[in-house]
Image 1 (cartoon, rainbow, N blue to C red):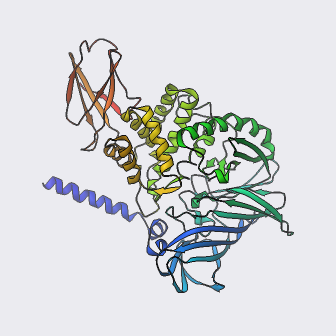
Image 2 (tube, rainbow, N blue to C red):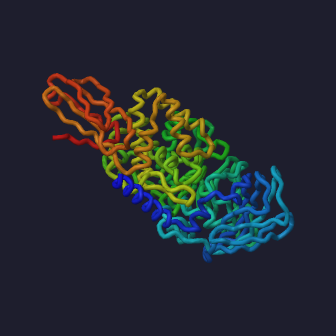
Image 3 (tube, one colour):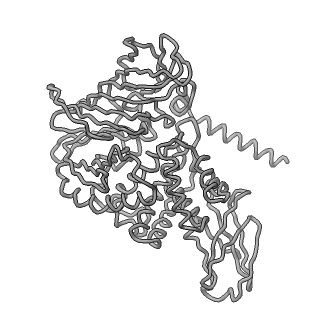
Length: 542
């Protein structure tokens, strides 16, 4: 009893210590206080000028919102290094208070439920420059080979409020889309999300480029890309495929994208459903950083190479026939951009399914065996450093294992279900059921439990909430095959398959040792454990 109490106290102490690592800034960005939940964003209309030499932004964002609860105060967000010039509502300048990156705006009267309101948020400043985009958020100011500006931005995790005023929470996307108008020096083009609506020479050395998004869009997906771009157009089944690339790379890009994009779209639409942002088209835009899943304007910076910067992350060679960035970042159009997690603690909903989409593409193109080779190769990059699910309400992502470990978990679930027709039907239904919705981990688990007719909760919990990989312990003694689980949660419940004399046998291990009789078990090659179909470790007991 004393030992148990000591463990409880230790666990609580560690939990409190972990919580102390989060700051008020974190909770202001990641939390859902009343000033955020009292309104629902309907639309963003961004109108800005970017000066490449000064690395500055000036302009405004019109934020249209619907009042959910009566309020006199709302929270918007803008990084505190950026200047607020004024906030205007109904021709009145509003008072506000800054608290780190949060901006609490006070109205002169209480806003009534169901009212549509609009504030114009004027701002300016020099946005944060990324040290290593896209892994840290910020702008990238670069040059092409002709010394012309090549500018991009990536802010996933860091926050969209790094460069424009916004309700910086994944819980709320603008229901009616957005417009992005960006003025850049003449001779340059800005490419943003959605459809191109035209450009206008402002007569002051700048041209305004106008883009329109019809669909709801994640805050971190709204983007700008500035360069001396050329436009390449293609199409598949009436879906526009547009590529904006540096002038120097035009011919290279035409050949490179032709190899992957159409086969990818055919595969993904078969497995995951119709491209979710058909109205806004599909674009790949060359960026001065590696890549990012900016909705309908996917950032591409893999330098027209196969693999990931010319190498295979799986270490197997199976990933070298396709461009990793094209496939992975486009997979996010279904998983992350269409289906979005409420809190970035659940970003595995984005990254696990998208990383799995790479394996799906390989299976479409090269077959099952190459797909299994690829996904099992990814296991070498799993760190098991911390849980895949992060801390809620404090803008905290879980472990980077959400990529490879998460994909391996999905591959495991496929083989637990043990019916490929059912599995692919489930993946398609999942994608279509939650299309353009914001969900959480529990929603995903409930869906897969219901559709599979199995209790998969212990499996999800093992891989997402712990740092231990199930260990299948086995030994043979004569004709007896002994087996059990180790390093698992108490209620862990997952079958595993073995092959014995060319026949598949499904076992249901527990943490207690069980045995089955297999005649002539000692004969060389008489059995095989399918650890390539289940993400587990094997341990032969002595």
